[in-house]
Image (cartoon, rainbow, N blue to C red):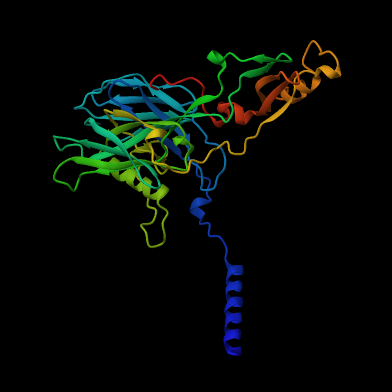
Length: 396
């Protein structure tokens, strides 16, 4: 028994020493001052404008805000000599008005920025088939968004999808009153309702599909997005707008590598991060990498809705679980003397800093008390969760 005891003790000591010798590995490649140009977007040949965002790359673990480029000159050039200028909107986003491109011609993107010039390789104008359907299925884990499409000409083969999701939610408490100019006033719910909001976010994942190894160019129920039941998005009504692109084989390889490098870290036995080859190059400094892959083509869209009443019974976590209400007298009780012309000072102390909001004012006939119910702003004003109170035009 003593031998077993000492063996275990020695093994434990050895493991302890090994942990003391462990140091994080930070290779030079992720420590350098990398500040490469990032070009993100797609040239839309159709009924919508095109948007391209210019920003700068950051190292892994860099917590600085995204650095956008707002001083670039950017244009789309056709091989027949046509030139179309982009216009800066904000935060590095450049727009090109609605444009129908020649489906039989090639184009390229030229960027002039801070004394340097960048030029893309020529790219064709791809044609996306219609989306057959966007559907959803649920299981014990959540809701899966699925896409179906096909090309009777068998020419598309390589697909990419983006999406924009919007969801409706309500705050914990509905505010019927507001604090204004030292007084509690009735809120006009037709114009000042802060109980119901809609929040919108764009996708950041890479969603791809290919039929290159199939006889027919048919995509069936490719997964686009998964919303876990634990998500606040499913608390009332949810909507997703799916956008479908057809890309070239080289563009597909680029996005596939991007997906592997950013979404699938895996283990040492999995495919390791690889060099991503952009189709944009710096003419001024050829050895300078550029991140991004530009293409052009038609974009097909389809929107669906998911209502909470359609979902299986499940645990729905509430982002407002920690919210509580409080109350106080808004005017002095009769037995303490006549009420003042304005609300007492404690009303000012409670609401002047904007951290609390009134919910309702209630009169109790039995005691003749007037009591205000209140809570923290984040429990009352739905905009505190990042949404807006204006109902989207597409919302039913």
